[in-house]
Image: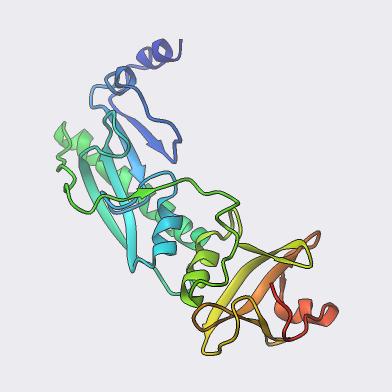
Length: 239
């Protein structure tokens, strides 16, 4: 029934963005010029479900948007246009999402205008080298592993902000970490080195993390000054 409804539209082209399913070939063949996908990565890097988060988590210097001619594979189609974005050191997944949404909106309008003017869209195959897959996010992987390097933990915090939110455990309850920065200090992984209005510093496998925004269980997000005013985690305690 859905395919019949689409056929009745007599569409020149169909566009998808952030669509979580693979369209079957029967649907891809319905529009005269096929289906276009606005994908939030520089293909073939980060095909799949969570390209923005995986790019930040991996420490990529840049990402972007590709408008892609869809085929039956997972983000494997020819690229119609590519638009780059430099990832800033403090960018969260929300920041990058918002920037790429604006870039993608402008890109698809320009490509559709070109299709209308020229009657076809030029596209190029994706390179065979450099293929990576952006797996779906899970709450379990968002748990902080303090034995990792502080830089890796900091990237995970930004990558999983706002969803699912990086977290750790304190006194048997989840403690979400929303913003942090690396500092040159050391201690046993997970050990609290300092807790005050200027930051909650926790040792990692390499260097340490200075947490500046967090969310205790049952509370709202708060900066570290607000947290420290009503909570005290003693140096030497473990997260």
